[in-house]
Image 1 (tube, rainbow, N blue to C red):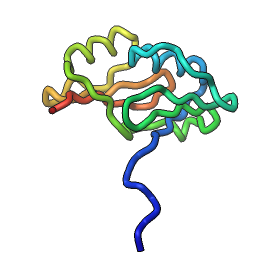
Image 2: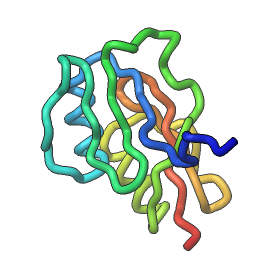
Image 3: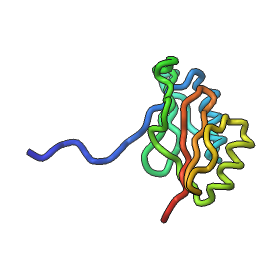
Length: 119
C-alpha cells in the first residue's frame, strides 16, 4: 500500500508564552519584517524558506518548552551568527562547537540551534 503521507516536514511548533513578544523576537532574530497576523489569538507562522516555524501560545507550559533543539537554523557565517545572537541578548548555552554549531535560548527558554551550512 502506498502511504498518503508525504515525506516532508510542514512546520515545527514552538510553545511560547506571549505570542506578540515571540513574533517580534523571532522576526528580529531572522531579519524578517513583521508581517502576517496572529491567527485564532495564539498562532503565528514565521515566514520561512522551507519547513515552517509556528509559534503557539496555546500549547505553552513549562513542561512543553523545548529542552533540546528539535531543528536547526542555517547560517553561512557561524561566527557572525554567534555574535549576532549574543548581541541580541539571548542566553548562549554553548560556544561554537567544531566550528559548526551553537545552542541558545529564546525568551521562553526554548533551546534553539544554529548550524553552519556545509554546502
